[in-house]
Image 1 (tube, each protein chain N blue to C red):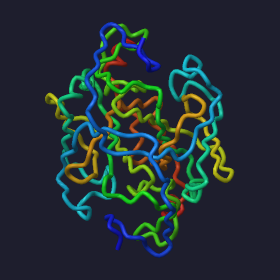
Image 2: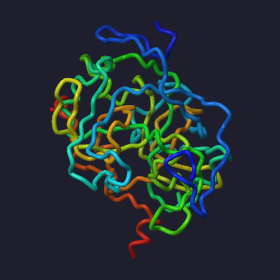
Image 3: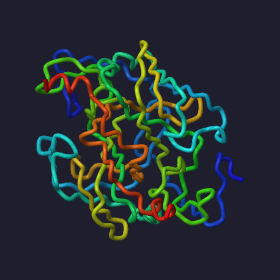
Image 4: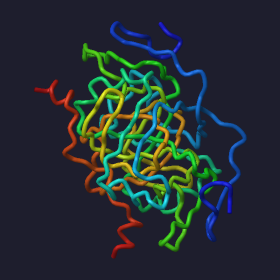
Length: 166
Length: 166
């Protein structure tokens, strides 16, 4: 097993990582969830109605002004336990190879995860939301307003996924 | 004017940035668009039908396997000319203060932008898409499959925006 939370499975392919990084991130808060082990996390963000809490660092709290008017937010967070060198992956239960960019797996060159969350309440720097699936303590990167006009594509299709259900 | 592409306007508030970064990113490709100056970019990602090209670095090209089955992708990219210290902003034409997290402005602590793009065609490491609004040469951070089941919320509301239209 690798030192990361993921090992490489048969059929998975890793590449050599670039020698240097190109840009850097600030963790701007933490996400509080009921899940402390990966096996307990919901399979995806609609997999649980659990209320999670996003705690924004005091430095950035003024940036929440008018966020209370949003019904849904896009939450970006950092999957800090994921390996970054996989280009082909074998998701458990699927039994075939997928390119990393065809999956929402946390293992990717830049392990930024994205969820659309329903905003229940804001109390100072704390946001109560439904729709997250990450581990307790996950670092927060960004909060954005969700605009149905540009972000909602109800008829979008994931061909490989639809083919599996047929 | 600030050294960044943005100056601070009356009513805008900046904070001191943290002393150090917490995580780092790889640029995994570049986005080719028709726009070389900020003033020419569409106001948002549905503001143009221009075909843009995402060029994935050869190292990561195998990660595109099965991406050709997707109708829409989520594209994350790095707004490398944006200042990162604004918590309150005065968007042009709006004339009032907004918290950074209530806006899709590129100026934010982690200037990661997100667009939902329609995939037209893949040719090796190049993806032709519609739905991007960034400058030519913008660094690519990630490509993800768009799942309508978790990512599409057609009835989401941005209260501050709806109020302006009334």
